[in-house]
Length: 563
Image 1: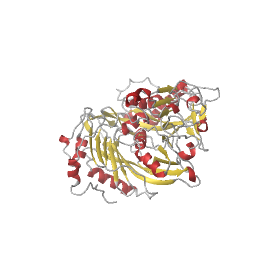
Image 2: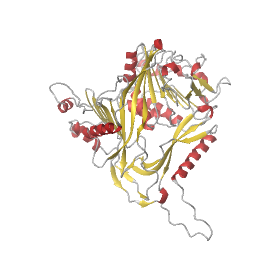
Image 3: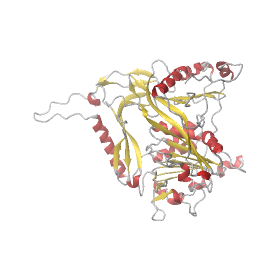
Image 4: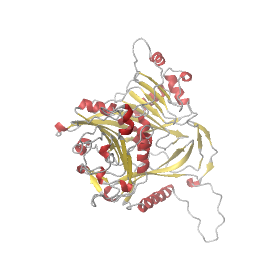
């Protein structure tokens, strides 16, 4: 794989053209919802019913959750900056009539099909017959504690964009696909968003979607990247419906505005991220060192060193680049975009994403890592003092299928190969999912598409202290009376098990008791957790909890060490 050097046109080299085209982009459009046909600008704000949401944490027919309200709330909080959401129903207010195809008399703009964009956060699962099961927060008819996709009709009214922030809402594994699961229910949707895998009980999916969309990404890219900021060992999915394959793919990879037009869903195209099991880092540390210390980080609002280094590699003088009132920097020329956000996130996009051309053999792991390291260094992302360790290789896939040719298997493509590194401090990786990472996406031929960074610079290492077994550095206990045994220090596994048991009791107190818990293989590790501007050593473990009726969610269990 040869190094890719973007060609910006004849007569000027890349540096000269970037200087000539140096601009501060206008901010992303405030409201991505386009005006419907015949809608006036004066009356649109009050009359339009665009955004609605439901979230459920306590159920009639499933175990309780912790973060569904924060998930839907994060989505609507971003909406509230430019429009008033039409409704947000929670827990006992979430009933089957909101989703059912059967018409019900109700106040205007109160069910999912009366708004253009609908977000649901909670439990969900898809069975082997490709039927999606959605548990309700309360009964409506007396026998509808759980609704299936067979009873839904989506898009016959205003609904065009549907977000299922639930497990297994869009399964894409062999034998499955959004077309096979949702075609009968679809009456006009343009796009759907969900998960192939079991997802995490996290309050950040909705907010993360908007954060990535505001970086200039398409809806599908924003959903995929935002979900991976929660946890990379899951498979988020985005799907588009259109009259033909080319239109569906263009919508899937390029749609950035919520349009009112109903789509004719003859062809379905979907894309998803999937981890490669053989290309993942093994846990670096499973037992805490005898001595360790907290690490002070440079505050993100003060740290522009990495942004300056990347801008310099693009041939730009950082002193001449405009910074907006929030501290953000946006520079673009042609397909190349650079963004530095106030939260410290940096995005360098060299080319937009696009569908691949069939399935291709994945290059060896060593070649992928070497290629990624060379391009990270070439574009200025490797500052002195920042240590990186390889984390994982993942694949960005896409597929398409037609309702007119259901006997043909979906045509799959390998679109991108994603190489992720984790920041390390003295050889110990940072474990916080949405901080301390560097992600590079390339085409299968090695062409680099984008590099995204959430790296943090170290300001100061605090004095190290002895913490036997990772416990607080308490003074020696008083001498115990003769015959009383000295208590054994708790192992890390036992400490994490106690946190898991507390979570199980918490969930049982709020609804049906969870049925089982399993530890996710390869997720138990000791590393640095970042909170604000301090990194501390933590023990972390991923678990999966199964509830009644087969609903499942995943959780990060974390314990601070030494405190």
